[in-house]
Length: 238
Ligand SMILES: Nc1nc2c(ncn2[C@@H]2O[C@H](COP(=O)(O)OP(=O)(O)OP(=O)(O)O)[C@@H](O)[C@H]2O)c(=O)[nH]1
Ligand SMILES: [Mg+2]
Image (cartoon, rainbow, N blue to C red):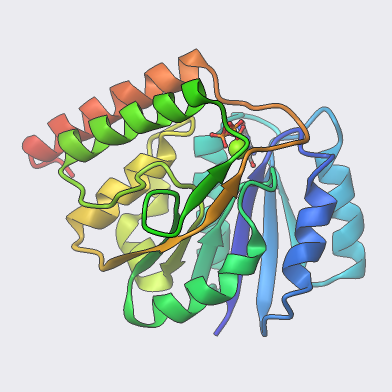
């Protein structure tokens, strides 16, 4: 079983090294890491490049145009499939997603298509996030669940594990989101393919280093994307 951990990263020079070594420390057999960096001005990609020279299981996918969380995620998924991944784990680079949950995800994926590291099931916790930020996520989550009819409790989690089979059905090359709405687009497309989805509780820790890339334009684009996905599915186009 070849597992790829796919990490989109932009200006995460303060986090990326720690994260990579934390994942490697898990000593999971046949695990590869690919960091998808959009030519970060802070040199995140150089750090990954250095580590990859010493560790053949660490890879850098450097993208020089077309910046965005969505485009990076799409190219990352394509990379994993092309390099023979049986399982793909996606996670953020900012240390909000603790790699310690990866073994449990890999256990859960044995009889599911997707395992989500969830902030909204019993036992989950969110640390360090203000009331306003949590409210923004709560409203977005409600909107997505109602619009797209998804039963998943945490539709905004970017900490997920996929089988190759479901990833191929999602068809990463056809993903349209340029920004963070790729998270919901992937979930909805998987839902339309009747994916068996499991949520496991995680403790989510707000980033302590580096800056957020999520702003009002990205949020607005996300709301629009959900509307578009709903329309396309009603027209039978997806
Ligand atoms: N390659 C690439 N990665 C990105 C881009 N924008 C965000 N990311 C990465 O995507 C992940 C999620 O981005 P964050 O800025 O943490 O967004 P968030 O988790 O929704 O919001 P906060 O944690 O509250 O700031 C992180 O690993 C980012 O480095 C981008 O344009 N290109
Ligand atoms: Mg984050």
